[in-house]
Length: 253
Length: 309
Image (tube, rainbow over the protein chains, first blue to last red):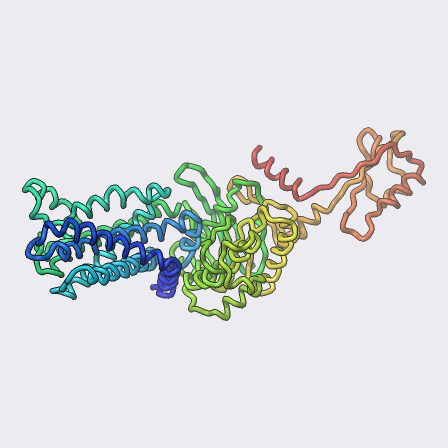
């Protein structure tokens, strides 16, 4: 294992994040504050409680997940797409590194950035609502696994994308709807029965449900299933990346 | 020859069906500068990319320092530095960081002193903290070379290092290459400028349509190139060359109306003046003069034409 190379990629990618630190931090804090004002205070004042939790607090796990998933995906996809776009990918391909090392470097950095933002939103939430975390270790575990698995997905998108439109396409058309319909702002039990069934096909439901359970101890689906879902998702992404590097798909002719 | 890079029967066909390399055999000696000369689309970049691991060979075998580039790619690639043709650099990074990154990527421990040394060698030491986007085109090319040298490679590939570069910068680049050779680095460069091959290479390889047509010591090639012919048209035809002129090895045209004298342009004395004087003294009246040079370009064109035929 070429740990020096992994570290080099990781540090280089993190430098990009720190170069634009202000916008990296301000934008998630601002958008989260807006969600709290609009959903938590304005709309939430008429909903009061969901599953015995105040609505303002109820949306916190969903909000964190929403940001973490989109940030992990976009950071990782941009991270690997940018070298392709500007041509610096030649260096990665001619370096004595294998697919696992490249993936660890890029995905590790993207997951770290997403984790930073998740933590910042969590801290911001304290300014708006009272929250207690019932299962802190489970919360951290769910957060980490979500960061990593969505960074893996983003990495695949970045390799696949042939232009900037395609880079935006999957996050915009697939991930955002799945996250919004995955119970970020409501409990699945609030939906009509037919929609509850349909919702169960949305993988994001399992992640948000598990994460929310870590906060409040209540979940839409059993926690074990949530864990299995995220593990399966991560394994599927890893398998796809292994195949990509083995065949050289879209990167090595 | 102690070959540091050995290429055997290398074929490369792209998915599109385009065949870029057709059975390339090439041995590159440690410490030499080899110039690969060929027209656009000859397969120069594909050849380099395949050795470096950017493209996968269809068949054939490549070893670098005795390591197979496919089965033992880590050891092989650690020995190689690559300077691509296009200026591919992260615009917002500093020179120092981007060179350090390359070093780390190749598995070498962080070494600011070594990075500083490479930057100094390329006259980039005062630009270490500058962002790449602030540099001129020539400086960016130097950064590419610095990146390729950061992990102390033994073999350096330069893909058209002076394409689209002004004359002064080209000379500058040649000095850098000479300097690297003095440091013991083996250099393979591609070019389509004949004078570039002439100026810096030890050996010249001619590649066209995916085949190596000729690999020759530059001086031998230059000896062929340096020959020039002087043709003298005569007013009156002659049947034989007068005895007084035999020492010049003149060739008489079949119709007896012209003689041709071959000389070396690089010799101290070309002998043109004495030939002309002696022709005059022998009573041969000159009607016209013309000279013709055999150049690398000519050798090149002949070879490429022969290949097409």
